[in-house]
Length: 370
Image (cartoon, rainbow, N blue to C red; front, side, top):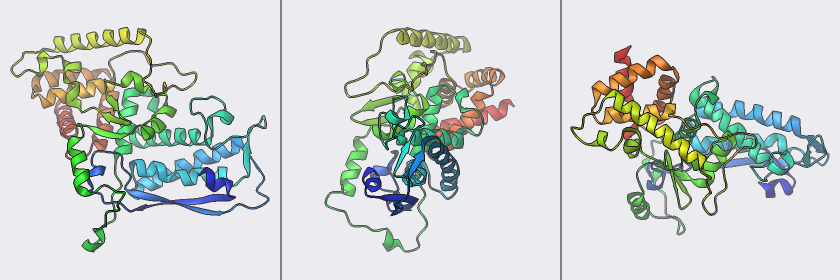
């Protein structure tokens, strides 16, 4: 993009074209793109002049609020929708020779996303911030998304980004057959990689950090709880991997007796453990940057709405219907956030997944209570 702008072109439009097979192994449970994003470029006029940063930023945010819902409406979802918005987002920026702040400092295309000033942070950091906020509005509704803890916001964004664009139906079966490029992995190689992959949903760390950093999500605090990071890949942990963490080792053993009091005691113990961990100084892993937004403090350790939903899903999966009913009665009395987040996540978990099945069971139990 930097090269396009420096060569004197402006970006006037952006169109995603579905070019990849939806059933290829590499796309299963990952944030692989289903299409190619084509940028429409035109020569920038010689008298393009200087852009005002405030006006450019406002125009970009308005364009994203218009364009992202339009893409979703037409079946372009997840990572495809995010990267397909880059073209429209750059319209206001690329029409000028350069963009200056009120202090006459130039705002570059890229920069340090953790910086506070536009001339240091760069335009694309603001683009991904606007994209993440609009994506969350798509997922959680128009209400204040800040009402949910960062693990819920991260999970919702993760699953939404993972959603795949549905390719248009094509009656010509032969059109679906493509040749393998020498540099592209064959189906056999893809299948071998899929077998070696760990359970859960995954995406490249670069994509993950671009959508979560602007939302002030401290991913290091969530590692081991709801995500795992290894070799440049972020994996959303399967809910069943949280069984011992949320219910204790005894609850997962067949025939073990567990009461509502035991569940509540586990909840208190987990909060205490998180508070102790938060008090210790944490060091990022080698090559990783602490994911913070300037001026925003890390959330207080608590038993979150996502924890409560995952706990209910596990109780359903373990067949503990009586205890599940007791837990749900308590949750529905305390807050509407539980039901609202459950409804949002149910629409995000892929069809046929274990999480989708468990969550549908929880929702059926909630309807029975009401």
